[in-house]
Length: 580
Image 1 (cartoon, one colour):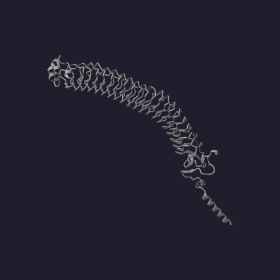
Image 2: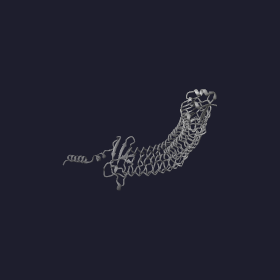
Image 3: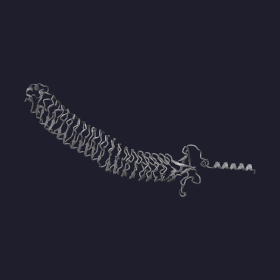
Image 4: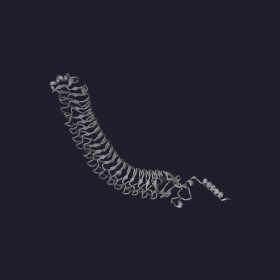
């Protein structure tokens, strides 16, 4: 055979051999192209190219996938098509002569059989959700070169027990270790400056952690659900405590908030049922809405002077909070601030803010309340249903008491209302069933709202001072124990049912009286004698007083007998009227 024929036959045999090879093997023979991106799976050759795995435990040759980053002249690594079959993976430091520097976003996400992974020292970045939900991953090393860990990188790695963050890492992004229920220890470098929200959320086995100095914020939900966390030192550099930062830390015994922190946000300590000490700094200015809501530890909280604002429900549902002092610096208090604090026994309220709507509503154990000078109003329902309240001290600066403010405070026995008080709202002290002594304001022209003292059956020896020109409708309705009533000069009107069902036996109306409305004193079964000092007959209704057959006498000024006899509706009582 000639030389040219031999060459032609050799070429034909080579072409035939190439055409019978797998496509992957053919691609592997092509030199790396300088394009971006380029993904390549480790080819199915007879050996592991660039992968240092023990010969006794070979990982599949297609377990890893590499993507070339042209601008960085290096590779990203991620799970290959056969990674789901691996319990262990070893990442090479180079691929095709170029360094492997990056673990891709979602690189090994959801590999729930993976137990161990080894990263080379060349890796400096771990992407978003890189190992998320690797529920059996127990061992991983983070190389010293790592300076970035993406959000949710290890979220849901429920078998991971310990990890050390490299010194080059200055930021840990959100939810990185959230749901790592077996994580017992984590080492943070002194160079760390930012820890984003919920990084350790629901790390139920984490008992202790050292946060490095330099961290400025404790962000939202950082340790929420860390039910085993017992000890925590907050760095002196911290300036804010985020929403739900320690919520559900049921084993946490003590926390000291450092100087410089000015604000504590919503539900930061909810569910910290074993908290024994909580130190608040003098720099604290604001407690946001629900800041301590749901804190159910047996603890006293000392609020610092300098505190300006307390948000809505800041202490609501703190079932074992026993006492609270609101400092004089406070100028704003949110609604329901201590609502349903079932164990609260004593409170002192300073500052100039109004005691807000439902501030202490449902605090069933509250016995003592002192409102300091400077407070001008107590809003509606502020102490409603505080059934144990027996001692109440009100300031002379108080000008108004809202509707239902002290309704059903059954243990309250005596009450002195400040002289500058201008209004007592509807049903304000309704149902105070043991209230027996009441001193009404003596200076301001005070308005008594409907049912203000209704259903106070033990109230007696009541004086209505002249500055109260109008006694409101049903103001003392069904005060059955009220036997001694003095209505002072200056009172002009008594409105409908004001003293209905009262126990009074005799009644003296002042010379200033102008009107007595319907049912004002009807029925009053014990009332027999009425004295009216007014020279001009006041306007009455036919049922302002008890029926004439239930009365013995009505006495009026002798000089006004004829006027009374002729006045409308007084003729019903003509036979009983006599002069004095």
